[in-house]
Length: 136
Image (cartoon, rainbow, N blue to C red; front, side):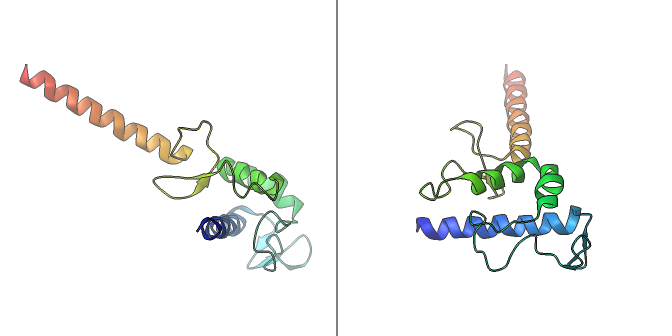
């Protein structure tokens, strides 16, 4: 069970990396890389996980990846973790189910979802407050 959730999380991370390459990489044009005049090999298909060297593109790691801070921290965590720490320290967001590294042990939302959850929580709190004021 634990192994399947780890593999599922790693596949999700690789999908987000591929989407980030397609959206923001300046060298990516219709599946090919302008820097090495060939197919884009920023994510090798022969590697199943990020930990064993699936992202060899230095341009992607230095220039494109920092544009998404959450993904940047997740990938650096996966690259530099030890083999016996299978995804340790990572959580899935309770709202969008994307992997993230929490700032504290109680955090259950990624930063984007956390802001939205906070707005919803404040809105409900204000609604309850106004209802109490009407009654009294």
